[in-house]
Image 1 (cartoon, one colour):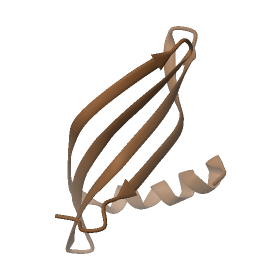
Image 2 (tube, one colour):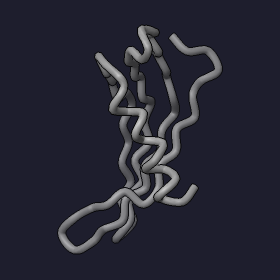
Image 3 (tube, helix red, strand yellow):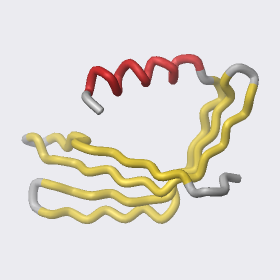
Image 4 (cartoon, rainbow, N blue to C red):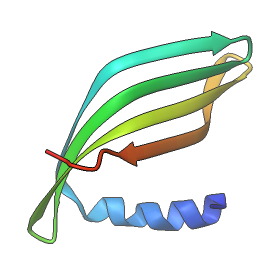
Length: 83
């Protein structure tokens, strides 16, 4: 997915209420100017009066940009049965 397409999909985030999240099992491995964070993300929110709850395996890839770290890639794979 290109960045413009991803940003347009994020517009729906503005429509959610009561967003909550919890990160479990965080592991960060640094390889010089790159880092990979893996964790389980439990999150939930209310949209259109419906409560949504998701538990997902998550990976973020970071790249060093001077003194800053920027997310270069993200991936979430929901577990087959959510809470």
